[in-house]
Length: 506
Image 1 (cartoon, rainbow, N blue to C red):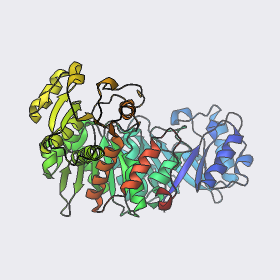
Image 2 (tube, rainbow, N blue to C red):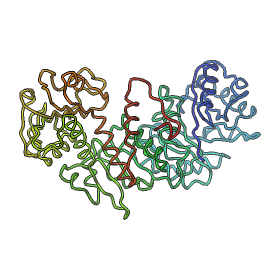
Image 3 (tube, one colour):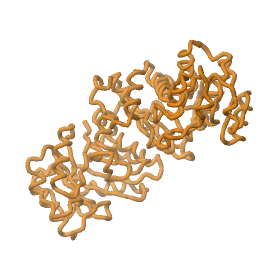
Image 4 (cartoon, rainbow, N blue to C red):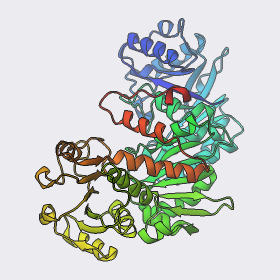
């Protein structure tokens, strides 16, 4: 079973020891002690005596991404002392591994880091390192393309000597999470999200309680969210906790993919065993083109937010925003005893992808739609395509409506004091649906509630579209209540605590 090696980089011995104890209490089984971070002479006897977990002792030079300020002779002496002291592992860069021989039971990690690129001669570098008497080879590069992840994971899978290999940077998160699936004995994580010691590094809590790294095996199906940027996405939290709650062996990974590499990346990611994708900006139109088959809603909208494989291995495209938005609006209408959108006057703020999906849902439900947008030309174009009315942004308050839908980012964190629609334009009986979900209670919804309007938050739509994706991925109903409460707790101002097990998640 692969392990998570948690890196501790602190300037004081006292803090290293405290974090080591805390990690052991949280379930860590392997810790890397970064001696180059310690401000004074490292006291190995103090650090290693009564250690609560096995350790990797590492001392990095600045050229290797470290902070060592002493001489090279002193650094090598410190590494030799770690071996003599019986540390479980010692990390030796490729250029010094031959000068520090094996001794006792300490295992040798022979490492190579490239902070610029993923070089063309990966296999040659790996073969060279395998000749330096390693117990583990560690090869870490910088991803300049998503496809670099696949090159490193190919290396892990085919290695004779146990190999830890992954890419740094936000493009490389995929390989950090999935390297264990292909045979890496461990991956690396940081103590907390507040102290990242390498580009793209995730925290121990994320690796253990969101991605369940130690449970990812060769047969574990992979799912992911495609976007650029993608680091802000909460989809991995929702889907992985849903998998865990339902006891489904699967892993859902954030995947940053530049727009011009979409199709090539998805073809390369077949190696990962990916069975489904959530798709966000800027890839929704590309996802529709990539699919072998597409459902009616995605074709009509001209974009897909979901790709999934059918039993024949064909990629199918779907748009779950459509149904999720319609269900959310109907929740608001039900609060005032109305059962359908038929004949309801809907004012749609915005003209982006979500607005297009919602506008189509309204029109097909016989609603009376009006579109408004800050950029007049874009709003008028969407209105013409949908065959509905258009009103300028300046005149939106004068447009009579029964349902108000905000599809703009106005009011989204951190700009929580903004609203796209003034309170004095509201009236009794109005249904207000805000697609913004962070914060859940936007200023628009606060003022609508104060006015006595029926309100629906963007959290409802986000969770429902994710639940629909979950069903397409797994063929099973999603734990909707668990997903809703997970998202609500995550965006709460109170610090979110990840659950330990399915019972806590529920």
